[in-house]
Amino acid sequence: MPSGRIGDHGFLADGRSAVLVDRAGSVNWWCPQRFDGPSIFGRLLDDDAGHWSIQPEGHFTCERSYLEDTLVLRSTFTTGHGSVAVTDALALEPGARGHDIGRRSPGVLGRVVEGLAGEVPMRLDYRPRFEYGRVTAYLTEHDGVIEAAAGGSRLSLRGDVPLECRQGDATASFTVRAGDTYRFTLGHASTYDSGPPASPDADRVVADAVTGWRSWADLHRDQYRGLFHDQVRHSAIILQGMTYGPSGAIVAAATTSLPEQLGGDRNYDYRFVWVRDFSLTLQALWRAACPDEANRQFAWVARAMGRIGDEPVPIMYGVQGERDLTEHPLDHLSGYADSRPVFVGNNAWKQRQSDVLGEILDAAWLMRHYLDPMAPEVHHLLRALADQATRDWRRPDSGMWEARDAERHYVSSKVQCWTALDRAVRFGPRLGDQADVTRWAAARDEIREAVLTRGWHEELGAFTGAFDSDDLDASVLLMPLVGFLPADDPRMRSTIAVIERELSHDGLLRRWNGDPAGFVICSFWLVSCLGLAGEVDRAKQLFTQLAARVNDLGLFAEQIDQATGEQLGNFPQAFSHIGMINAAGRLTEAAERRDAAGRPRQAVRAEPAR
Image (cartoon, rainbow, N blue to C red; front, side, top):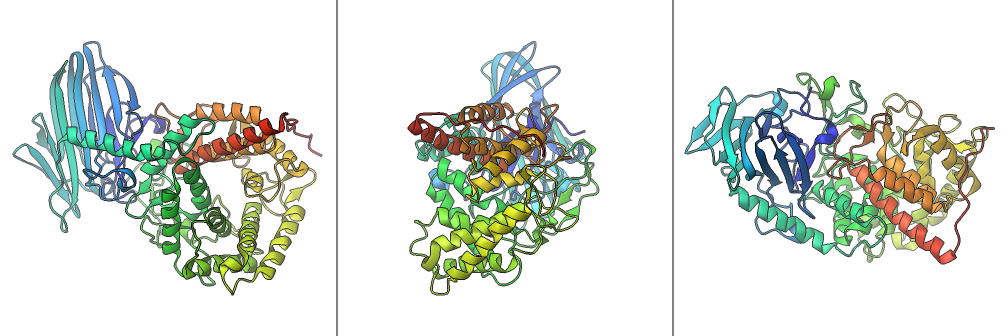
């Protein structure tokens, strides 16, 4: 069993990689080359896949927090003999500030141990395991620096205490007294095409990371002034931490193969960039950060997609725009809580998911003022997407939940094809002389009629997950969020109520009956729908309830067990924090409309199934 629960981990980032460190001071995940690169610490997925721990000997308790407006983590350990603080930070490029943080980070993890009271015996265990735990490197010591190299990676560990090396591990025992400070840095570099790993002083790593993160936060201090300001601000920092600095792309999560259900096999690699998340991500950045981040996102997706022809639009990419993300299992890893298989890569890249058409055109419409004058390649991209929606909306697809059995006529995919065409029609002549607005408008109206006819289930009193189906699916909550139907339309109000009644427990909404846990972003979609339907007070209450489900550092995984409250799935999950930001923004707008109107709306109530 790996060290710690999923939600016990803190998240550090440097704009190209992420570290997860648990409440016992153990670094259990780091892929230093980039988010989707091979790990050197993979204890999260197998106890023998590498870690680096600094912790008190014997029994201790831990209280921790981020330094304000940063992803620099400070953990205070208390024992029967005293207390120490360990401050962890991934280095940013020295002097990088504001929007430049994370673009040229040196690949260094700094750890500073400070004695606060009494004296505390400490133990350090350093066990690097390269290539997802496949390779144990020889460790050598030169002038107090522990060197390790395997394949294309090499590491240098230096610290203020001597370490004993044996059989691929290094250990140290030392006592920390009040006023003492011990510093450790671990640098990574490529074996063959770069200089040696950087080795800045750990105090400098921490101080520069604090200054860099706060300089970014200060640029956005007044960007969002709505409800739940603190949660929105913190989620924006987390999204920045999940941004691959050189390209501006945001990964879906920092990890691979953390399970949706303990012991289950739905374990996928999320260290990639999904077009599906694109529009929602831009909305979140628009609300909580500033147009600079949103503009970088749109520029990245335009470059990654290139010229679109008749083939299905790719639904996901690597952080630099790579398309081939072929999946393969890591059979030597036992998986988190024996949840196998463990995968690298994700075969969803091969799927047809028609919702991506709407997401890109919706994002373009959101940014239309910044796309004017529109470049010729943007004209072509948006026209090609609208043409593809016109041609292919009748085809089944794998849907936004990436079904791996069979393609179906998912309602949410049809709705997003409608979104694509609706936004293309709004753009009209701005998409150039070849814009076929008449044809797009006719297809848009045809899709709408099909969804209202074949997506609606009269006996359930709800829109269902697929045409001519009686299976509920929370994805239809997107309908009012993209403007397909108002939330207070009688059919939509009934759908919201039925989905809440059948799929929700304590505010956690499953995607469908049989989903093993509550899906965080769906739960925030419910919040948004209630607010748009006029139930602002109940939506606020539900938001507050959901926001309390984060771990002690304000981090969400993808899912939360409805019975135990345990966080499940890959971690931290951008989609979950995006959902929180957008729900807070919609609630703010709904509250302002209600206050302007001067009266509350009637509550949504579920009608008995007919």
